[in-house]
Image 1 (tube, rainbow, N blue to C red):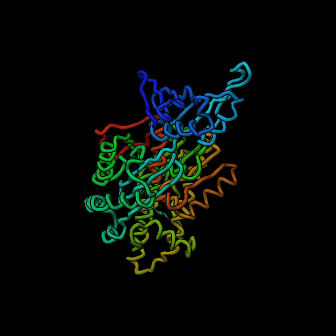
Image 2: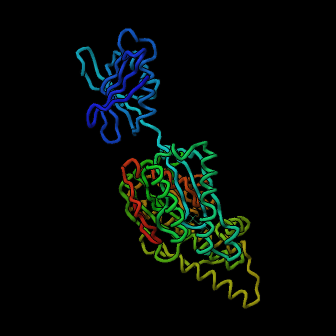
Image 3: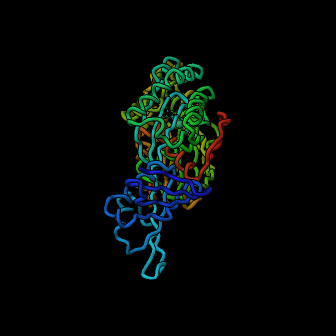
Length: 443
Ligand code: KG4
Ligand code: ZN
């Protein structure tokens, strides 16, 4: 039999009984989310019967904590082996702590499972992310086929579809992960920026789950999610420069570390993804335009002269000029009864936009002294842009990383990855959190 007794406000003792006799015990102290194991003791008659193991196993399974800490004499080989079997790692050595040797400080971090929801635009996505880095299971339900008919996202239709889909997407993700909601350590979602009605579906679902399962709620800025897509599978290292290219944003952000973000450049008008969509529309390509422009550009040549993009020495962008230029060009040619070579137009447009992304990123790299560039956002799934930025970095001795294509366009895995950063800092949000259609990048 095992019992867990509270000794005082912070101290507890777990006793393990054999035939009504205390065979051994663990004493531990609770300091916020950390458990300090003060003593693990097995009485002599009961040694070598796995009592220590049973006690530790009970503690780790039943006592809620982010991590467990203990200190052990370096010569206590039996105990060290036991702790290592449970996954404890030595994180520090206290020299000459004991008369006969050093003390090892050992730590066991519990795995953290975050369930994240993304519903800011036209993708209903739910993901379970382990320790901010492992994609345990993700489902992305895209509404593209419905919005295609209208040539773009219809906000009212989008929010209704999120409502219809959210529980199924949630259920599918849990079953792919083979997990229950009780096993989740925190619930996170995108709360800004995005379409209000769409955001609210994810937000209310997440807050309700957090309330029912009594687990922290974490609100995540969508653009922060795009950045942290780079953390999936491998941790990013700082300082770094992030180039975010999506349907609503074109930003250059300097991150000294996880907690410090600084805008270095921004678009003064349209976002690069928005421009791809517009150019696609004027040459009758279906929504979303970006991937279709990329496809045509592959078979095209750079024959159309494009205007020079913002060249003011700053790291800011401007894409409205090239957008209007393409619109006027197509209209004028149509009026003259001339055929537009769509492949060539897409190729010339993509080249000009990519050149601007490269030029401005180089300015930002110089300004910040950053030696690491990460690319993020839906447009980052464009192979030409990925490759062009990669070779610019290679030529300039800058480390480059970009997420797998499936993590570039909207998904909940990236929201889970970003939420873990906030989880580590205890940055939880209240149930009164509201959705916001606009917000600068924030942590
Ligand atoms: O990040 P995202 O999925 O949603 C927003 O947060 O905006 O980005 C969507 C944008 C759309 O404008 C879409 O056309 C563009 O990313 N996009 C692309 C490609 N795939 C998606 N643009 C260029 N090439 C692509 N392959
Ligand atoms: Zn996005």
